Image (tube, rainbow over all chains, first blue to last red; front, side):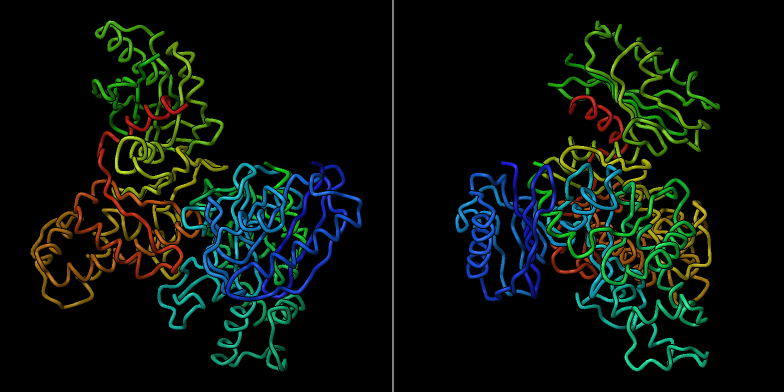
Length: 313
Length: 313
């Protein structure tokens, strides 16, 4: 029972990791995600892929402590995956379904952002703390809360969804979720571009950003690092909104550490420092003293966290 | 071991309850709060008061399962009370100090708003749910999160402090905490009065509020109930800010129920419905389906919650 699989189901690919309790990640690979109205075809692909890996390594299903799975939708505490817009499924108890189909038990299931947070907590940036909030800055803004080694799922499976905290009651444009003024509209990669494009239209300030044909969040942060004044002003503004949103979340769960992950966080220490400074300047005194760190596991956080769900039981 | 005391230490009075595990609250009373730079004098008063009650009821300290205490300051998970501005103490492990001084063990200690939330969870509005967020609308806006029967304290003892969520980045006036734009500036009793007074200055709309010499939150809600158009508009506005703040908190901890308590919540179902409607209109779909309830235990929530800390162990 020393082994497990960590499986991270994304909209495009399914990532796999074979883990040993003693030696950690032994092998990783990925396959394309089979979409459809229900998960059976994809689970069959996962079964084949796992069985191939076992036989290649001279292992049997009996050697497994279980399988952990991350999926892109809310997951309730009792294991109901409540719709995965990107893949096409409705509500499904994916763990139970997978146990039957794959013939391995138990199969744990969690939301991908929350599972990534558990990965960072167990194997990455949060190894030394007892609680953390992870904020993932990518196409959207995702999040996860880990308290004493466990994912906080919540009654509806949405605990940790910091991206939809309302930061501006006067926002006129709509977020993907249908609301207006969500953090995601300012701090996701497209949100940052939106903020920058509006500013470029509304001011005459000179900026290297004006010469960029297709503006991206990366190019915005790169320009700020190189000292472009407007880019700097914009990243300060975005960091303030992000720092205040993190403070808002901290009033509620008050974790020991904040971990910033996702593609945009590759702007690195420059971004981390700016967000932490904004946090400290805008949070009330008793909550000021928090650790801030960049995610360490990057694209592997999901499979690591999925393995942690198995080994932590 | 069937008995315990629940003690709620406030800025003005200390409330006591003698509880039996079978029969609930047997007796309650209060004494004035002795202020000072450290808690020994007050703990001695508590000791005398508890010993009198025991002897009057023919009970001994050995009959006690313990004492629960609520105090007006952040309390960390390991029991450090981090300063109580209203009473004058610095950081203190109040439970351990009380155990020695009173000669009863264990003594549990929690933040007053969080302990009140535990009271509602165990004996009041939240008896049927597994998690709740309580929001206390009074002189300030307090809050507490209960997850699976336990108070969420947080790394700094500030988990549940919904009153300091930033709701308006453009606010110019300062909150008591030193920040600007906190929920408390709009949804505490003085915050509601502030909002109303500003509106009365900035508009010519007729309103019965103009004839009130000393405007209070209660008078504002009463006027709204009686159909005053401006009062109605203002309570809708306040409810929107409160509903969005509750939604912001729900994205992070996603509880099963929201309980509204504190003096202002005595505006009753009229207020509850307005806040719940604002919540539903402003929250993202997966989180929409939450129970809303008014607090039931009112001023006794603290002693009930303090007793629950003892009996739940």
